Image: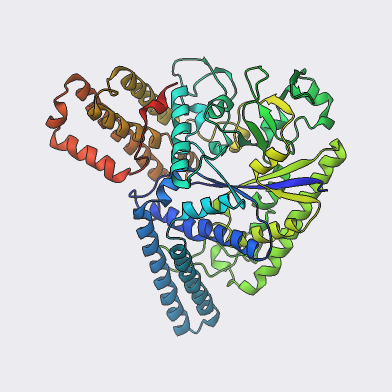
Length: 568
C-alpha cells in the first residue's frame, strides 16, 4: 500500500494577445508557449503511455488561453511561426557551416527538426490543441482545470457580481472548448479572500461584508482549487468529520493542539468555509513549498544547472534561436559555452530521481507524524516546462515514470485524490496569494492604484447599465452591452498590473489596459444613447461605427456573452 500520493499541477495561462502586437510583446508569447510547452506536454503524456506508464497530470488551461488556441487566426499564425523558425534554423545552419562552426550547425539542424516535428504534430492533432487535452482528460491521463475568464485577480474585484461573471464566463468557455465542465479551478495567482469585512485597496466606498471566494466558485459547481502553503498553515480549525457523515464543531485550538490529525498540513486537503457554518464548500489543496523549491529556486533549482540550455542568449536579432548552455552561475551572456545535448539526458534523470526521493521523504514525514495518507501537491507555471526550461518536459516524463514504478507513491490528479481520500476537516483561511509577500501587493500598490480606480468605475457603470437598461427586451441594447461586458472582462486581467509592478513590458501592460477601458467606455456610451433613443443605432456616427468594428476585430473572444452572468 502506498504511503502517500503525488499531484503535479501545471498552470497554463497567457493573457489575450492575438491581434495586439507580435514581437517583442504580443502574439509571439502565445506561439512560443504553444511550440515549447503545450505541444511538448502532450508528447510527454503520450511518451509515458508508450513506455507503459500511467501519467497523471493536473493542468490548468485558462479560458482566455483556450479562446486563443481555438481560433483559426491563431492556427494560421502558429503555422507561419513554425515556418519562420524552420527558415531561421536553415539560415543559421548555412551561416555556421560557412564559418566552420560544425557543432553550432548541428544544433541548428536540431532546431529545424524540432520545429518540423511540431508542425507534423500540430497537423496530426487536427490543429486543435484544446481538443487534444480534452481527449487525454477523457482517457484519465489528465485533469483539466478551469479558471476565471481572463485570469482576473478576484480578491480585489469590487463587486461580487464581477467575480461571479468571471467565474461563470470562465466555466462556460472551458465547457465550450473542452466538451465538459471542469470541476477543479485554478484561482488566478492563487488569490483568495475569506468571508467578512473587505476593504478596497484604494479609497473607494469603504469596508463592506462579502462572501469568501470559496462560496462564489462552489456556487458554480467548482469542487476544488489550489492555494499557497501559508493559507493552510495559518488556517483555523472549524469542523471535523465523523464516521456518521456529520460535521462536528471544534475549537480553533484543535489545529495547534492536534497536528497529528493533519490540521494545517500542506499534505492534506481541507474543505473551506469562512462563514462559520458546517457546510463544506470547495476543497483547497496547498502547494508544498519545499518540493516546489527544488524547481523554482533561481539559486539551487534544477533549471539553473550549467548543462541546460540558456534561455536568454539568442543568435541574431528578433526571434533568434538558442545555441548556448547556462554554463555556470554568474557567467554573463558573452561567456556562455555551446550547448551539448548529449550532456543533458543523464542530468535530467539525476534531477528527476532526486525530486522523486524528496517527494517520497515528504510523504514519509507526514506518515510518521500523523499515521495518515498524505499528498504532495507541486504547483508550477506550465510555461516553465519547455519554454523557460527547455529540458522541463523530459524531467516531467522521468518523474512520472519513476513514481509510476514506485509502490510507495500513488501518482494522482487532484480530482482523483479527492475522490479516493475525501477531506475530513473543514477550515477557514486568511487572505493571500502565491505572489511576493503572500498577499495582494503585486497587484495592488502605488504603481497600480490608478488602474483599480478605473476598473472600479467600469464595474459600477456596467452594473448600473445592466440594471437600468431594458436589454432583455431589446436586441440592440443587449448586443452592445455584451460587447462592453467582453471589454470589462479583458480589462480585469491580472496580467496588466502584474507586468507593470514587475517592470516587465510596462508600456504594453499600460497600453492594453487603457485600450480595453477606452473601448468599454465607448461601447457603454453608445448603449446609454440607445437606451434613451431606440432609433439611435441607425444614427451611429462614422467614428462610433469604427469603434464598434475595431472592438469586434481586435477582441474576438467570448462570442456568447450572457449578461445574466453578472446577476449576483
